[in-house]
Image (tube, rainbow, N blue to C red):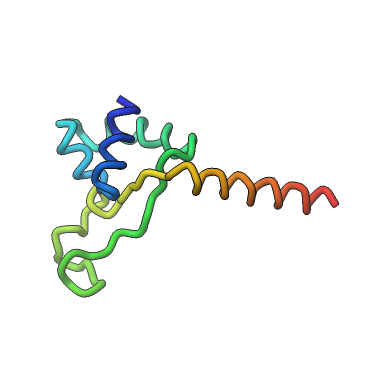
Length: 96
């Protein structure tokens, strides 16, 4: 299941929790532990959801639900490598 979620995110770039749940025919709450694993492994990340129709104000629009506002995207290898380098730089600067 981890692989399927990751492949789907790579294919579609960004998907909301609702879109992922609909695709896999699962409740969003059942999918969240899988997404949490991928987040911890830095295979995916959350991104800011842009409101779909009201110019930045989500009052009354279809994306005002939590499941629609939680948006995920796959993290490519280069981003993970750079993230790891930043973490190593922070650690080494703290040791000095």
